[in-house]
Image (cartoon, rainbow, N blue to C red; front, side, top):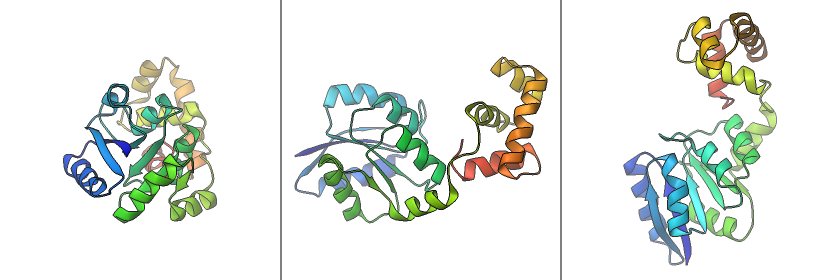
Length: 197
């Protein structure tokens, strides 16, 4: 039996995935969690062969969890088919990345292929990622934009990130230029839509 852990903050989605996978003769769902910060403990307790992670969860994002669980067979299962998320997931060492609108049989096949040592990526998303390219933002520019997304003032951002206001303005200006946006709110929207934040 292939032992699977499912982490998704939406009860209905998590339960649905568990029910679908449990219909497979060779797959057993050994644990379900609703928060990213619960995954490591559940992994230690249940020793799954494959871990299915959503990206956006309370406590810790699926991408941060994937980074934490390097060496485990992790598959991102998400509604966010954003090229930047795919790139960040691959950097974190995930074994698979599929979108939630994929057929149930495809998810079960992904679990089997990942267990066999393959890397499985949604082909449509892979093509989009290749044509979009990697994020042009530096780590610090992305960090400043993340804080700016909460509509913080330049002074707030500077305090929170221990930077000067001038430095924050420079990072924001660079991020606006690199995203082709007219202002920081638009830069945040562009960066989020491409999965760069």
